[in-house]
Image 1 (spheres, one colour):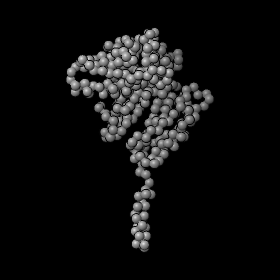
Image 2 (cartoon, helix red, strand yellow; image 1 turned 180 degrees about the horizontal axis):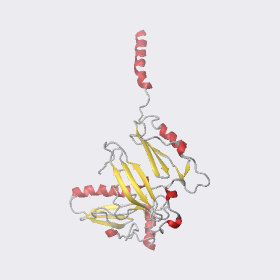
Image 3 (cartoon, helix red, strand yellow; image 1 turned 90 degrees about the vertical axis):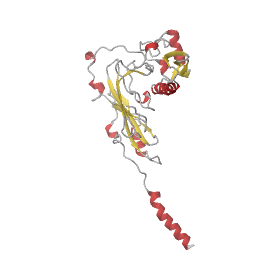
Image 4 (cartoon, helix red, strand yellow; image 1 turned 60 degrees about the vertical axis):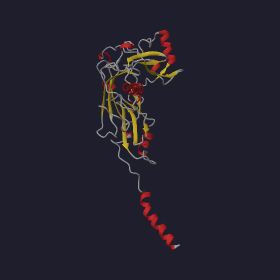
Amino acid sequence: MRRILLLTITLLVTISPFLLRPAQTQEPDKPLPNPADYPEAGENCKRKVKLSPHVSTPDSGCVLDIHTCKGVETTSAARTPRTGYCDDFWAKHAALGQREICCDQGSPEEKRPPEEERPPERECAPPTPWFDTSSGCKELKPSLFLISGGAAILYMCGYPVFHSTAGTDEIYNEAYRPALRDFLQSRRLDKVCCDKFEDAVRTGKPCDPRVDVDCDGQPNRSDLQAGGILPAIDGSYTEPSGADPHAFPPGMTVDAILPPDQCRGCRWELIKGVLKCNPDPTKRHTYESSWRCPSTGEVVQVDKLSQPGARCPY
């Protein structure tokens, strides 16, 4: 019995340092937001923004996004998942959860010239309600893509909106299918609100999507990206001529990187998009984007981190 007791004590002494060892955590890539730096907006503030913090916990760590006067700011840390490994991130989420800040002083809004000195508001491509699937949609259907008889055709709500020559090279066609799928998903074009689509077909307002699915004035048959391989369909945003932004990294959608503020009845223009690859392919890459509101001329910068290990072709 004494031998058994001695053996038990020895095991506990040996194992206890491992049981009591604290969780190995890595410091965030930059300091977590300090609530003192984001005072509550007062009654006289003209331009208020809700911080709307969001914590995500991908397999390799913790991520905190907040909406500021300059756009979405992201803080992340690579950590091994275990109980409480993102507690410091959640603590900031709780502290900032209901906070609304004022963006008048020193904000991009304040730096804009006075109303009388601003250039006249110019027309912009009207919003396309069939690509807004967030609310009020009665008939949501997926976009369909078929390759048959040497032709590649994209259908939305039963209507062909994009046509490309596919050829008979099966290796090319097999690579083309996922490329188009990723393109549609990243721009939130993979699902369409068909009751709104049919309303526009019937009324022609804001445009007839059978002819110009994104209402940008460019007919579907010629609304193509460079090389004519992919369609140049603008959904919740547009790309002005000559912008040529990098594609979003795999796993990133336009919802994650659009400016949080509205653009006065227009769609934001993506005037610059640069994907900066991390030398370590297992880490996150940075997508830096500049957005312009065509009706006001306001430019907003939004930077976003990709998923860990996302492919980076640039």
